[in-house]
Image (cartoon, rainbow, N blue to C red; front, side):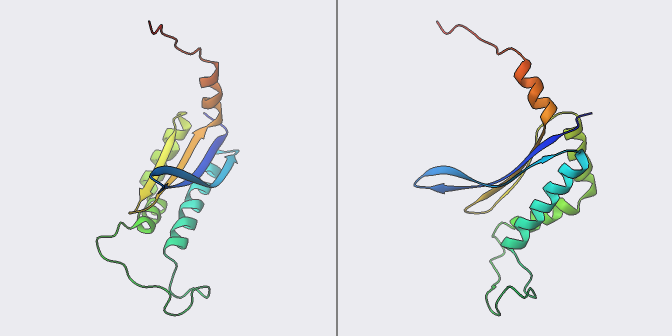
Length: 136
């Protein structure tokens, strides 16, 4: 069992023809449960900022307008992931096994990525000797 997890949230977009990433947060979770909680919390945080409730006191009247049906629904994807117990269990199993987990959703301009990985697995990768092959 892996005991500590490193979690990241990043937004990726294009600027001057190059893909750039903007870090939205990092958390070193001391337990698997806290890693999952943090990923769900960040996914909900992104969803609420992209698609706030019209009843929110922070949103002026008339500020929100519906988008076309063919626009990718990043907030919906993130909210669905947060509410899906089966997918949460799959993420927990992958993390517990020491594998990197990536959850991503994108629209026309931005990709939102949530990553988590075991700190123990990262340490073990550093101790494995690099494979070096002669080029010539």
